[in-house]
Length: 119
View 1 (tube, rainbow, N blue to C red):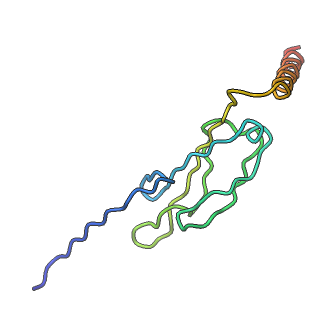
View 2: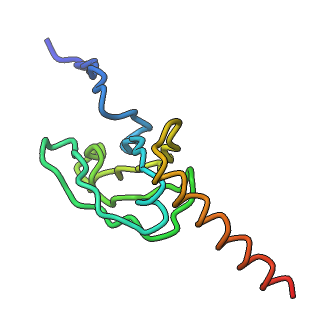
View 3: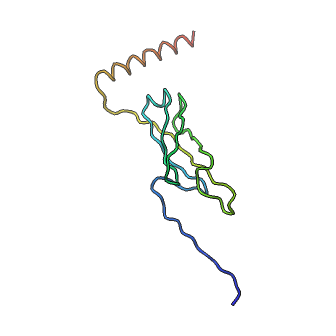
């Protein structure tokens, strides 16, 4: 008998990603030195492979890096959504004497740069 066919598709959540339409979101946490100096990350994609992402030096917390066409397929077969990486920082809670000395030196250098800028 002729008629309409309705299909309901349910997608199982993937713990690696959060979905927003065809875009996928993921959080990446960087150590402070990698955020300051820049780094390259290997990020899992929905296809099961990995892709490299260039994280620029001086990236700020909550910056979003967008990987075009690495999300879910769009309905109708016209391209894919994006994979969006939200960058967070990992601040050390405990560190050794040498690390503390280096952070103190860095603070002193930053203070000198601030004073020089204000003059």
